[in-house]
Length: 445
Ligand code: SF4
Image (cartoon, rainbow, N blue to C red; front, side):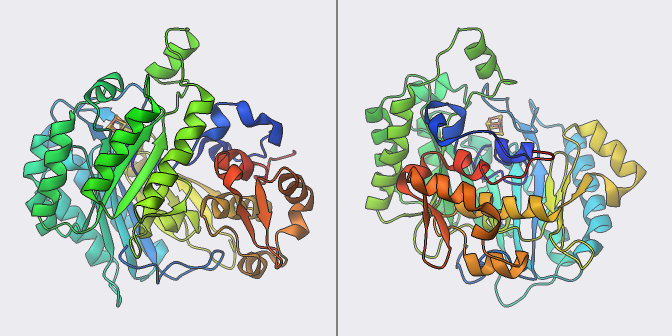
């Protein structure tokens, strides 16, 4: 599911980890407009830069009923998911958790995110075993952890909702994408609008009062009027959180290959850019606040788990393809990231060798960490707080990025406050990844 998969997927430019040679005149490029990837309270959100002393856990459950033609996540097709395969995977996750948890000490659990893939294909007893293992490993503190499960609209998943709630899940991220059957079909999605509506209603009946809905836009042959109808349905239902995504055509996907071969045409860029503003106007008009380039929330309902990535807080990622943000230490003051193998057998083989070292770790050099702090900070509407930045890096952003800041302020994509705080302008939000990429460090660049 593309919903809030920050544990698996970071913005493409960011993943390359280099300063991308794009300049503000790249506005027309399709990739630069790409917007990627969340509670009961914002009280635990650090202002940026500092370690909040807690831990988030991301668990990747990679199977989907079928693989959507635009998906480039670490996913596997399951028709259906074999119980033996499921049980082995859950055991492997518990093994990895036990081996890697000591590196995160006895930090209180801020959030647990069960993402995929389609995690709700797992039996409720499997989800309960995972929730129990994680909550038994890390202590609770005054605030109950946010425990999110990704779900796609389907009859099987809908029937499991009460059991997921009983397993301790307190938040759902539902891959609705659209209420337009024609668009769902063109996107290769398995569900139809009526099932989406039934799943949303069933989630409320099961007692979930914290729901996030995914909405895709700039889909094949989608008009602004089509998107308006989707927004009408979302607003009428009234989830606590909405994640919105512009469809992208990644080269290694069937959609990407179809574009390369001239068999498919991506939506008009002006139309797609207009849709970003259309989504913002409609959702903000309905009482949601856009707090991150892709994310909208009702007051007090920002997603705590995703915020951990944007704010570079500790996250333990478990499972094939999962990413971790390791704890900062005196030896690694800016932390490290770890990427698990994207291939199931490679991850399982690595686990068998050493469950504490299944992924590849990369310590963050100061120049890389500075770029990430800006890139990720700019994704949040509040932007980058110069003081918090200076506490970690010794000086405010301008001391390191004067040229980039001046250039981006000049074209009115970036706003610099009097104290040196940085945030995207309205126009800059249409190009969030591209603007942020201006700050990302390139080795030898
Ligand atoms: S539901 Fe589709 S888009 Fe989402 S993870 Fe599965 S294959 Fe990818």
